[in-house]
Length: 239
Image (cartoon, rainbow, N blue to C red; front, side, top):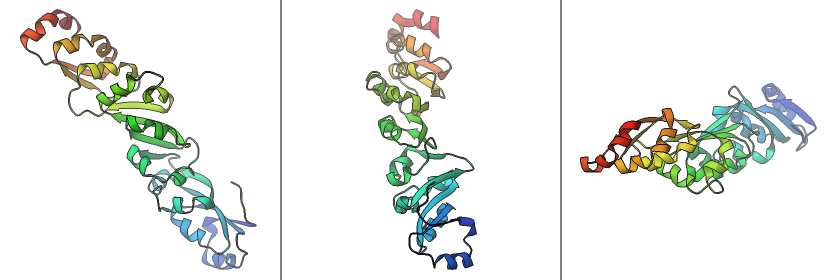
């Protein structure tokens, strides 16, 4: 990291006698390296302080990205960032939305993982400069709606390179058409789907359902005998 002061010192060397001596330095002449998040405020308050580099683990960093936190308050004085131990910072989609933009901008490129991102938030999260990858979690209906926009407008398609997995959040069975619509995501789907629908709906979605492969846990025909009759042979050949 670049320095702006005349004197540089590593944070662990800031013992009480050293701090007292450094107080005699001119204003804006001291750069402090490897400052943990817990020490940011104290270092920034030193009379001669000019700039610092920050070093901490991913979990601690993730917990301090909010507005009003030390990273947000002192972002302009931080000119370097090192993530130790886990090397990445992991946030949920909700936490990422609540994080301070200036604090997020401090993270090194490729150091941010955002999980459980809703389809509606993919574009926002994908724009984070530090992003490595995201995981998407949403309902089958929302996933289907996005895919139906086509590759030029679908967030799932536009940001496919940054999406590592997709999880369907529906607690119960999914209708046949939304489930079948997820077949283009089969390679990235996480977990399995249970489908329950009328015989006609299932018959009309057979190709997509078959393409889900191991991600299709079960198919239940919820229909009357009269509704099932026209499709009984076709469905029995498949399931």
